[in-house]
Length: 147
Length: 285
Image 1 (cartoon, each protein chain N blue to C red):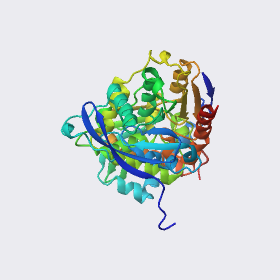
Image 2: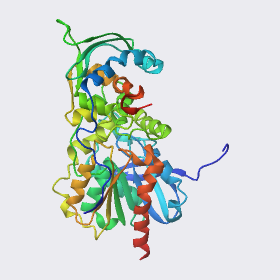
Image 3: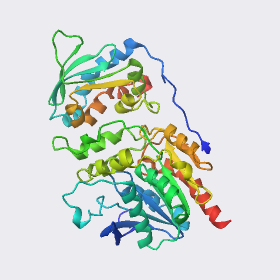
Image 4: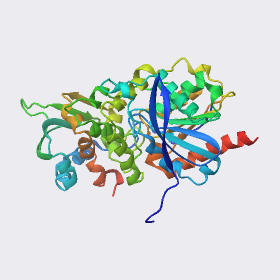
C-alpha cells in the first residue's frame, strides 16, 4: 500500500477547564433566544430532556423551540425523555472554531465513546439538526477562539 | 452570467437490470476515457456536477454520472412500486455493469463515493478486467455502524429532514456554505426508504472483509481517497483496507468529509487531479 496521510487528531484535542465548559453550556439559552432561525426550526418541539457535560448535566425544558427552563441536575424527582451527555473534553473540542476530525458532530462523539444518548430518542431524532445546532451555539459565541 | 448554458447533457438510456428494463437518467460531458461516477447512498448524480464541467478533466475524460434506479430522475422499475427497496452487492454490481454495457463503454474508469466507494472494491474483486482503473472515495471493506437505520423511514419522523441531519455531520466544518446546503438538499429529496435501502448494501450485504486480498492492482489500478472529517468511513477504515491490497494507493484528504466532490469541489479537485493524471499517463505510456 502507498499512502499519503493528512492531519491526524489527538485525544483529547484541546486543553480546557471544566468550569469554562459548564459556563459555556449555561450560555446556551441566551444564545438560542438571540437565534430566531434556530428557534423557528424548533417550533414543533416540546420536550423535557437532560443535556450537557457528563460531570454537570442540566434539565432543559423546551417549548415551541424555546428553552423555558434550564436547571442543573440533579433536581428532585425531575424526569426527562432523553439525555445527551458528553465529556467536558468532548464539548470543549466540539465548540472549537475548527473542531478536530471526529470531534465535530454530536454523533461522531457518541461513536468515539465521548458522549451517550439515552432514553426515548424520538424527539432527538425528529429534531436532529435543531439539537446539533443548539449544542453548537457556544462555537459561534467565541468559545475556543471562534468569532 | 444570465443565459449561460452549462455543457452538461442529460439523457435517458434503457438498461436491462435483473430481467427488467430500467429507464436510467445520466449526465455527461467531455471526450476521451470514459469516467463513470457513482453517487452516495440516498442521493443522486447531481453530486458530480462540478466534475462534469471541469474544463481540464473533460478534455481527456468522458465524464458520465447516472442516477441509480429509485434515485434522482431514474424511477423505480415498473414492477417494484410498493415493494421495499433493498440494494445488494449483486444488484449494485449488475446495475453498474449493465449501464456501462448499454452505453458501450470501453473499459471505463469507475469512481464511486461511499456505497459507490464500497462497490468499486467488489468490481475490483470480481470484474477487474472490465475496467481501466477504479477510484473509491470514502471507501472501505467495512465500517462500524453509528446509528440505527430504522430512523430513516418511519411515518412519525420526516425522512428528508432526518436523512440530511444525520449526514450533515459528515461534511467537514467551515467549508463553503452553498455546496454544503446543496449536498444536504440531495438527501432531503430522496424517496421514502431509499437511503435506508441503500444502507442495506452498506451495512448488511456488502461486508467485503476477507475478500479484498483477491484484488490485483496490476489488472486494474485502485485508488482510495478519504476525507479526514468522515467519521462514517474513517481514514483508519480506508488505510486498513488499503493495507490489505498490495499496490493500492490511499490518500487522506484534508478539510473534506464524506462528500468530497459536492461539499467542497475546489478542495476535492486538488486531490483528484493527480489521480486522473496518473490514469492518463498510464494510458499514454
